[in-house]
Image 1 (tube, rainbow, N blue to C red):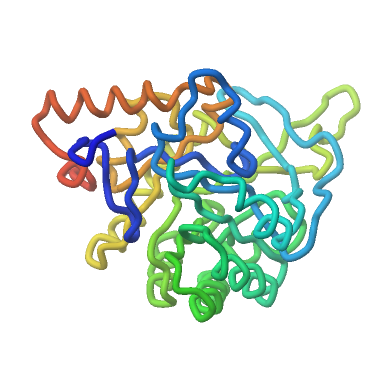
Image 2 (cartoon, rainbow, N blue to C red; image 1 turned 180 degrees about the vertical axis):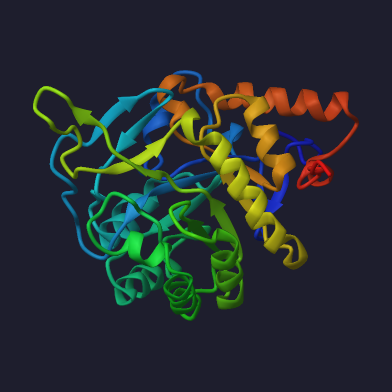
Length: 311
């Protein structure tokens, strides 16, 4: 990548080599895909690390993942070694010269969000993603993410203990995502990730029980793309006057998918479930975007939010 590459951009003060962001939960703590032959962190703008809580968590009982038509449901339950282990053991092993790394902060209480954010603030992490919308734990995330007042309270509390960029991950499982975004901007967020997974269930018809051990989980993949694009556009209407950037995500498999999100209002695009189909999908997405920009003689900045609604 060169400084003049048309895919390079600024996101919350961070230099992204490309608009592609690898999403939390899909790439562990940043090492997993570097072991895949042909994969390079230089093809991506940032990596969102796995959701991290104050103390270690074992996560939910099995089954944790099941395939569905055009997608998958997961209920991992925030299994992680805890923030101290991530900061002291994992972060020092990451190559910050290759790409940006974004911590994903999760919690069951406002105090836990504060504790985890404060510890990441004292680390080398580039930015902090606040996960107020996790649909596969029995406490915390869903309640916070679906209530604008609680969302703003978490953002405000985290803002008070860090100077690093804050990216708030918004839930689609709420009545008015634009109102939630507005409150989070007022509380001090620097950016958004739109959207997190949708709540879903799959049933074993022979046992007449949910397949997922947690009964329900987060639906991701191409099945949610139309919803994610709409939510991205709705949040962009709030963000555009405040210069707040959005990582648009939800079902992106191709460069054409990514372009839809950018036109709808996303500055960057998140790739998650697609990595399970094709670990080398990002360079293909990048090439499609690059070709589109050249064909239409435009830039990422001009393309972002260029959607013209039907009258």
